[in-house]
Image (cartoon, rainbow, N blue to C red):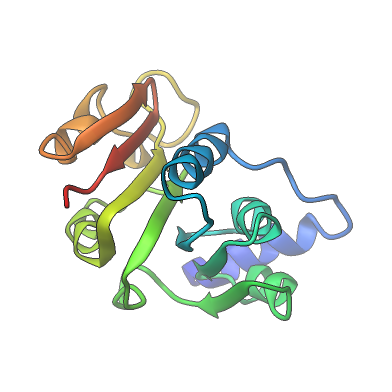
Length: 173
């Protein structure tokens, strides 16, 4: 069974359930960006799942590229206003071309994406993440980070928020 198959099954099992609320770190990042720029921007939602964060941003006027390995998840987002939903296996494909004003990564860890995130964000853009902290989550430890590692990955950026598993960092420029 492929990773896509696993997630397709999980998302099919969630059929009929209302979309979950957006991650608080995404709400906070959108507020920070909009208050500084007086406008919504262009966002990339990594491993978007059923699109709780993409839907939230699109509802506020953001133009969102939402990517996930699950065809089932992407099909649920296809055709929604302001969302460009794409099936993409992040382990094997390059990220969509930027520049993006906001890149969000909630509950998905792939360390080799961090340099790509830094590359595709526009100067002044925000990276918002919620990655479980090792020892403080029931998630497989392979998908968690030691406390402080996420902030260290972006230590040369302006750290606007860092608490527990959450980070919001602004790209210099």
